[in-house]
Length: 257
Image (cartoon, rainbow, N blue to C red; front, side, top):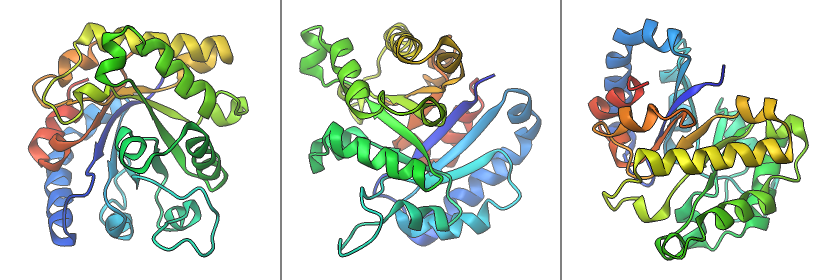
């Protein structure tokens, strides 16, 4: 049974004190739903800025339904790369996950499929589970190119990996036109693309691996629409932006399966 995931991407938000307050509030709320998380195989993932990673190791100790990771990692192991943070450094904080290829990294930092492939490989090498993002912009969807775009992003970046590594990757579908815009893909649109991605994994690897891969939706997922989105058979949760900064809203999302 594949995991259901509520993943909160804080992006460049939350000071140290604000982060402590947010996690403390979320833990207090989640403590009322421990049995729910266990029965529904739900994992809550937190992706704060780098400054919070060591802190989360302490705050989340003894919380089996919580895990955390970084929003990005370097393609390099170590060295003279000012401003970069390596996968091994992230892993040393106790983190188990890293987001690779978020649309904002592709857009603002010109990260190519080749670079993202290198990042995913080095993350896996250092014991991190990638949350690999893919998705089309509005112009591509309007031209009916969304399936070709997503297939090329996956094929060029990760579909040449070994099966044992593919099994460790979570896929996040981000319709870029729905990120931070308040516009959300309909549950049917999300299901259509998630099913397409699952079929691609089956075609390139196996039906077994496809059925075990968690594919989550990222695109203005919030407390109001999560239940409908998560009711789709191939939508295994959400990669949540703004709503993850409000403890009550993110808690509602995490209990929407």
